[in-house]
Length: 473
Image (cartoon, rainbow, N blue to C red; front, side, top):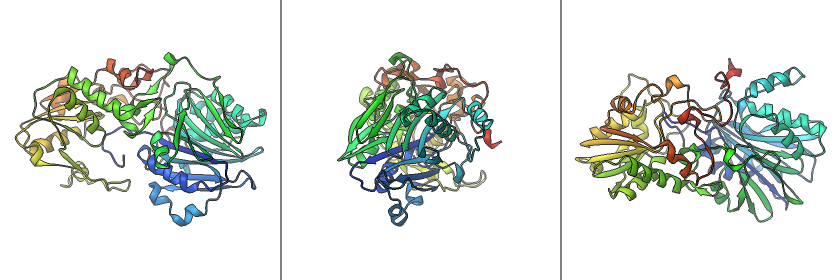
């Protein structure tokens, strides 16, 4: 997703692979992370080891995009047939090299490599508890708390997978984990299923990944999703499963924003295609918030599929009104307030020929603070549109997220203290319509979802204070 103004961001992408033929896996992890780059652009890393050789881990991580941190030389220096990879966007913990993942722990039972996507709401209590028993923390991320818990439980259990299950009993919040012990690859998903995780297979290798698009990129076949609450263990005996932490289907709580915005449109999550979900959201908007117009356009990228759905349902032609600069990356220098270079104009430009003299319906996936929507509306007006009607393929954000999405505190959310008419006046469009909360579950194929950021009601008790970033204070 590279740099996005005023958008919620996902925390991370995780990837793991075990090649039973003994082939080096670092380059495959590289391509897997490349496919998951939209989930995090701050830092990335790869850790590998050899299941047949000495228990040594080769680790390389750094700040930046996957193709900035890795090159042909350093990838070829990473030797091993089992490994994990990670790309990060921080919602808890500073954006510094020390917080990059995967994490590697050397302890009495060997080595542990861990990559984590999500956010724990009880990380502070767990960290304090561990610190009082002698744990020394080198990062400010809750992923290190998880790694310590697993290592500590492993000393008491017969297997690494049982250690993961025992650690999960103490964790509260959102997590998709990929863990590697010396001869096992383990995947785990929190009982609510906030974050996605799937299993793939290529030749004689098994893969764990945040999204199915990573499997497609490396030419692997999709096997199945890891179920919410499930721990899967992959070793030379095959795949084993522990479902002791699973909840009933109606108690689960997938992050619905995976379907609306985070995931790549070619991804399937728990059997549902993300592109289809976005088309459906656009159709619902056309049914519930119709308006007469000449053209429907999407704000790239995730607004495009919803715009197509709106056009299909309404019969109003779909058009491309924006040219997007795809090269605005992590290192983009944001212009000063007073300068004429608008950060929105650097990212997007309007095709005047498409909108001139027309009544335009503009579809976007969300409005967080409202700090860019007004500029995009004005750009479309400046290009000659006679009317601009805005439709949003998610409900209004009225509350923060504690589960791995950086939706800010309530006082920064434009919808928290304004009516829809007041928001419309702030961003300067002729009409404004949002997706209805009642429609959300249909986007996930009827599977249970978390809609806390839209309703203020969470699947588990939220913390009493904003826990994000507390350890940088």
